[in-house]
Length: 304
Image (cartoon, rainbow, N blue to C red; front, side, top):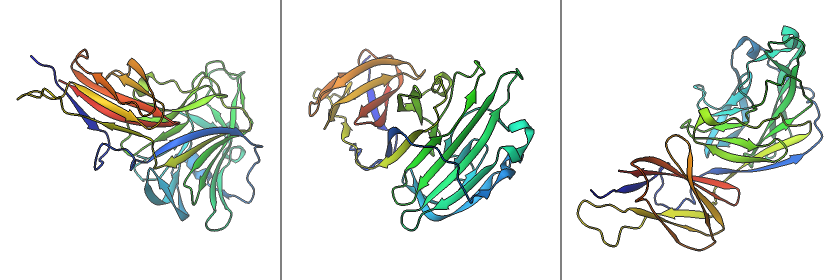
C-alpha cells in the first residue's frame, strides 16, 4: 500500500503564501517600573466578576478590531466568551491579606490620538500558599498601544520565596484556542513559541525581575512561504509523499507529532528549496513549525 500525505494550512488563506497571515514578533528589554497614577479602580474582579472597559480606540488583536476589553484576575480578553486571552499566569491569585484594597486592580488611558495607551495594573497580587512562612507577591502592568496594536507585559517588584513555584506563564491564546503563543526559555532570555501541547508546556522557571518588559508586535509581512508540489510520478490513488519549503531568509523547520514531541529539526538556508520526504513518518497528524526572523508559522501535515 502506498503511503500518502496531505498538507493543510491551519488558517484560511487564498494560497500557500503566508504573507497575509497576522503573527507576532517578540522583544524583551528593561525599563524603570513606575506605579500608575490617577487610575480607575476595578477591584470588583476579585469577586470573580469580569470588568468591561469600553476602549477609546479600536485595538487589533490577531488582525481583528475590538472596542471592548474584559479584565479578570490574571488576564484580559477581547470577547465575552474569553476566547482571546492575554494571560499573565495560571496561579490562583488572591489579594494581599485577603484585603482587595491592598491589591488594587486598575487602569488608565494615557496620551493623545493616535498614540494613546491603555494601561492595566495589578498591584501586590498574591498566590495561595500552603506554607504561611513563604511569600508570593508580584506587580504587573499590561500596556495596549493604539496605532501599532502592540502590547507589553511590564514587570514590577516581586517577592517569591516559595520554592514550589517553578512555572510562570505569559502569553496569549488566539481565537481557535490551540495552539497558542507563549513565552518560553528563561526570564532573562525569553523567546516566543507556539505551544502545541499545553499539558507538556511549563512556561519559564523563574519570575521576571523588576523592570523587565516583554513586547509583542503584530506583523503581517512574514518572510517564509510553504508550498506543496505534486509528485512527478503521480498515479491514480497516489498523493504527494513529500513537501517542499522555500524561505527568503534562514529558517528552521521542526516536525512535531500529535503528542507534541519534536521528531525532526531541519535548518533551512536562505533561498534554498528543500524537499522533505514523508515516507518514513507513521500515519497520523503532524505539525510543521517554521521559525524565521523571530516569526513563527505552522502547517498541519496528515500522513495516511
